[in-house]
Length: 118
Image (cartoon, rainbow, N blue to C red; front, top):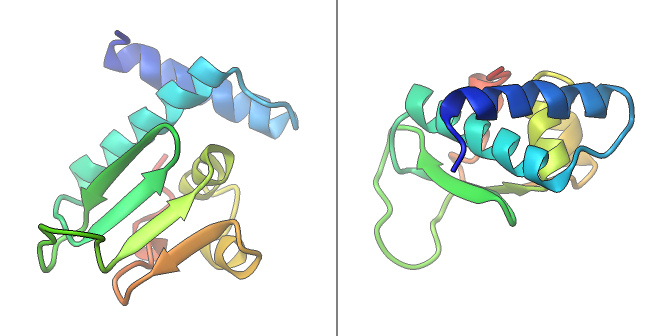
């Protein structure tokens, strides 16, 4: 199991690969995504939006009406590279949504006020 410091190092390594137009190693990508998901849920606690980055993780965050059963009404989903790009400011939220890299459903599923995170 990785310790948080290792996951923050994974983020730096993953972003360096992304900046060099290279694919990060799968374990590095996984640890980086999980680290940033943890930061997001710590900074924006709540259960009104579910952020999914398959296959690496998902968190519920953002204050508001709590979701308890079935498919959440506010869901954000994207691949790992897109997630790291948008949360680091390398990709604008609106651009990711416009070109289909980010799917966001529900009236609370706009993460733009909460990013960049790292």
